[in-house]
Length: 214
Image (cartoon, rainbow, N blue to C red):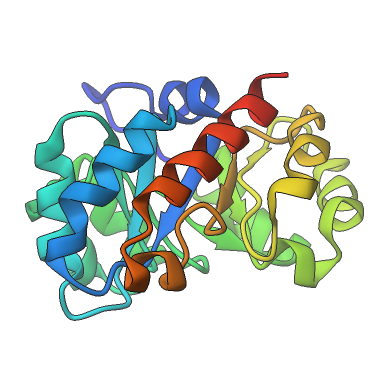
């Protein structure tokens, strides 16, 4: 993750939380109740993905909630990074490594966590001065075995594995010293939001927070 001058150390946010709910929110109306449920469950930060037309409005509403440090996910262009920061994103997450997105985030003074899936991409991230990356899609790539194989030659790199991880795998990932935090969407799925089942979001979040601290 790039750390611009005069910006709070982004690793502190993720290391303190250890859990990053990844949210694809269809409508702005869900933003407030969702933020309430996540914070009631003990979440400290969240990633709003840029996968829906309302993503900017959702991000802005959740950032204004005040209970969460909110970032933008699925950011794949510099222009999206600009829009995300304008909407209140405190950090940016990308599914892959793109030099232009990293450069734009540095220009904007916002931390960026790019995705990697190979040793070659990891070396490019290191060359760009990054020390935190997202392993994506983690489980589909081989899970902890792949993460450990990638981490071994790069001992100063920290990982935020995301993709296919659920509550049953959370503790195993967090037990690895190379893992800074884990991203996941099981706490607030599309079905939960479609049904408006915020009690279940709170329950699943509380369960995940407990698993991440034991």
